[in-house]
Length: 253
Image 1 (spheres, rainbow, N blue to C red):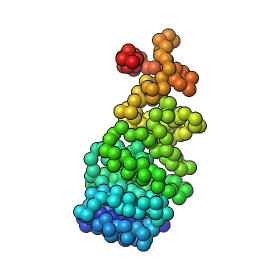
Image 2 (cartoon, rainbow, N blue to C red; image 1 turned 60 degrees about the vertical axis):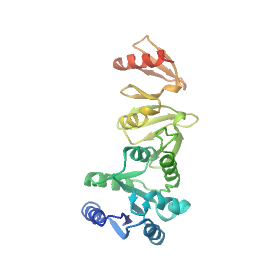
Image 3 (spheres, rainbow, N blue to C red; image 1 turned 90 degrees about the horizontal axis):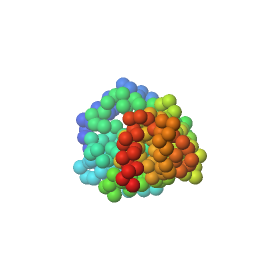
Image 4 (cartoon, rainbow, N blue to C red; image 1 turned 180 degrees about the vertical axis):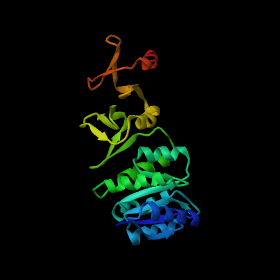
């Protein structure tokens, strides 16, 4: 049995979430509900649930206010936060960089099942303190020029400076990250997802299997169909349709 609390100032949305959970996630037991920031803080401290389904915008503040108030304690009293939001695109991107779970209003049953399945598949107790701190930092700075990214594996959550990522490699439906001074790390998301996330951070998809940090590009070799040499001395092919864009970038250096 997985325990949970619902924190949202809209009674209808809380009732709707309860109905969805009873239909699609019967293993989750709702311990309590709250409709305000202050009540949400008290509820989480008293119930110490496995999951908190947390709304962002509430009448007396935000879900972030709850997390800031709980500060270091949330990792001890709640092992998983799932944000439920109709919030702006910027905040959604901040969630994705922080490797935190979120659901968009109105909640889609398939998305809910996906999030619950992901939570159940992680065998360890997940202390999200660092990733929540990263999220709060990004939200507070109100910029999409993020400095760090959280990568979640079955073993835990790893935080890296984005500038230290040399390249990302597609491995079936997984992505292998090659990071400076770190062993490679395999993430259960597609390269396309990280292309969308990192394209504004100085990364370029040069091949169906390779996404590179342009700041870590050492050289582009035109022979043998065209390939790049990265700072880790790896040699990666450049697809025909990506050559012109890559050469245009190099010409502007």
